[in-house]
Amino acid sequence: MNNLVEFRKDLVSGDWVLISAQKSKKPVFFTHEPSKALPKSKCPFENIVQSEQGKNLLWLPKKGKSDIKDWWVRVYLNEYPILITNKTCSPVIQEGLFFHTPGNGFQELVVMRDHARSFGLMTKEEIKIILESYILRYNALAGEPCVEFILILHNSGPRAGASVPHPHSQIFALPIIPPDVSRSLNGSKHYFNRTKRCVHCDMLRLEIREKKRIIYQNNSFIVVAPYASKVSYETRIFPKKHEPRFEIIDSRHKDDLADAMRVVLSKIYKNLKDPDYNFFIHTSPPKTRRSKHYHWHMEILPRIAIWGGLELGAGIDVVKVSPEEAAKILRK
Ligand SMILES: [Zn+2]
Ligand SMILES: [Zn+2]
Image (cartoon, rainbow, N blue to C red; front, side, top):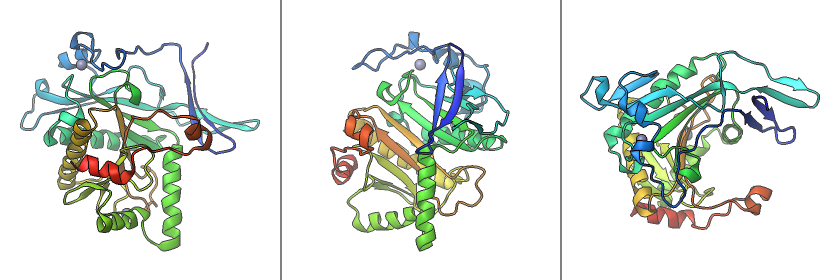
């Protein structure tokens, strides 16, 4: 089998999928459930943790330190990318009925220092440094000519798709706008065209009035269980002030975001007994200058349920814990 890495467009839905069929399969380091533990001695990231050199794209130390030996977060090119690391811009090619484009892009690993310290156990300062690394790399990748969207994500646990238990995030720089982002952008644009208001700002005003789905808030961020959650205990973090772009966040707001993440991720860790989860940031695409209708946010999706036929066959997500109940449990 030859390596095949390309985005293909579904002719009916218009959605892109990524076909990434590669010969060199990446090793999986998770032991079988229920244990999520992998001893440090077998952790592939401990090489990174031990070495003071390496091919860093970025490293950031703990507060008040400046030496690389005091690093807290390091960013690398992923050694086992599902994309082709390539700066070349490729057009969308039509072949008969179908459309495809090479799976070019960048895939970076954001590795935290501590083998067993997941987000639910971190301090606000530690999370703030990780946010800083996201922003610095986002801005570096946004300058790449062929990058249309940058997805910052974190997979925690095997059911969330992480292949290594050592805490790490990933940054994908993609040559297309992904389907979920496209739907979210179009939905908020339609609402804006109709009402001249941001749909997220309207929803947040209602949430603040009703209070029953609010999990936490500070000066500049609010955490809610969305009215139409996709999974049980879905949690979203929104800036209170309307802002399409995550990457222009200033220091005070970064502090408040780190606070909101610390509170909610530690509550998920404690109240739901450390479930597997994904979180990601949805923000306006870097090259879209006209997106004032959009409102950036972070989505946290615990991976508790398994999808059945109704979800896959009808696209109807069955949520067993109501968002109102989920908010009550996570507020504790
Ligand atoms: Zn490790
Ligand atoms: Zn808004």
